[in-house]
Image 1 (tube, rainbow, N blue to C red):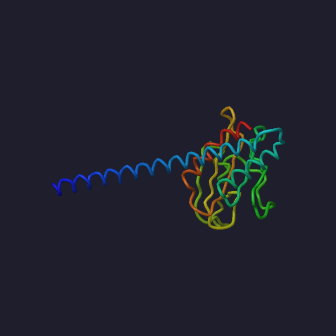
Image 2 (image 1 turned 135 degrees about the vertical axis):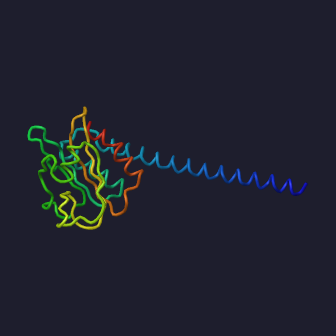
Length: 184
């Protein structure tokens, strides 16, 4: 009788442990979803109201970089007539004069992302010999470059640099706000 009771208790403990593990997983997923949704709300609030393109660009890059704890970032808008990306704003950039002001389509990573119309993650040390032509050149970093659209037309490209690996939830947040940025 004691052995049967002991076995039942071990089985119940294993089930409780399994349930706790599943609950922990669900709680973590909910925390991530809440973090993403809060970020979307904050950015949408920051984009509201009448703003010039420069003000809007500055607010967007600042909010995204602050919320994701990015080191730095740049925002380029697409000029349809001249078919090139034009620099509009940056965040925490040490030498704004070093930023390339105009990027042609297919030129460097930013131009390539614009042509491919899909995001790209660049890892490693960016230096003069590699000539990857990102707008963020300095140290060991991970740069995430993503385009944004309105009505399926390219409107611009944003590049954000991180010191650590890009977390999946950060990428989800960035890709989730891209549509709102294009509309704004």
